[in-house]
Length: 113
Length: 118
Image 1 (cartoon, rainbow over the protein chains, first blue to last red):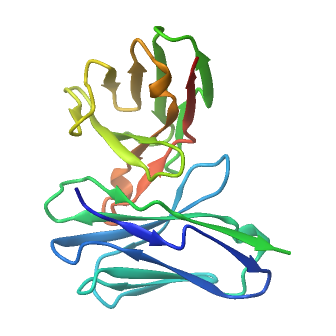
Image 2: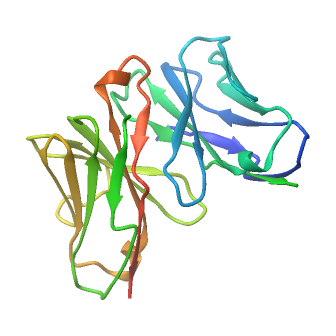
């Protein structure tokens, strides 16, 4: 069983503040790390798919970094807005697991106006 | 593009009855779909991989006779919870891969179905 952990489980952020949270995953047999954003009553949507150690991806105010050697990824939200409120999921794909993704428990972000 | 629709959004049924959940890819063909289950405060757990035209591949610990998966067309996979019991109450969500996004490998998800078994 692959262990994918996200921390914290939840966090409250004041509008305008920046925040970040972590996804840790096995450092061996890495293939890809996905980040998804899941708003209440909607479908999870892909933010990033990261495959290279040291990679950094950005979409608007949201960015992510990847360290495959130590097994962690950070997701950053700059200047949080209420519409950023969602659960952010990371998912790990092992090179030995075929098409399967193993999800972390998610970080629930609530941005307060 | 790459829209996945799942129905019903929520369902309440009596213990012992069967419930069918549908997952449709609306604007693409999905040879492979994935069914996940999420219990409260836990992560999405893969139940099975649904393969068009062939048998589903179930994860360890998931009863194939309990959770019947049918993927008869390139746009539809169904999950039937047979003889449902209260412990089957959970959130079920499907996802699919779109060959147009094969280079990224990202999944496209349905909205999920919340099952409550009384």
